[in-house]
Length: 183
Image (cartoon, rainbow, N blue to C red; front, side, top):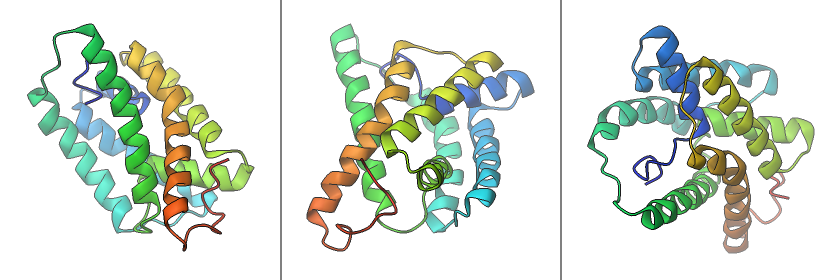
């Protein structure tokens, strides 16, 4: 939804585009390479990958190369904007659900939770900081930035935080869990 809206891509995809511009790799393969590099950042954070982590690395990279050419965007700007906002909300909701499944976070979410645990900052603030950092790096490497990119960078962390809070309301096992503080 977010990519098809045509108003920009996520900051991590901007970074992958920049890597692609610099190396000649596809955006999907660049996403794979960025994911592996991010996993190396997990070492000092003492994050532990799981099945979900490895699945994320492979499936996201393949999906970008296979699905992006097939996406068709809406005709009107109003629908494009609504689709973009819904895309950010759905990424937040999906992240809140899969992070609590304990199958291992994706590389970017593991970086987010590791930095959150280390700094004690809120998930929203940590995610926004990471997103804005990779947005700038990707843009400097030649990735493209749109209005949707900036909205995603600022909004997705808070969408994840809200989703985690909602999941905790309905899951007694997560109510006292401090590993994903959504303040």
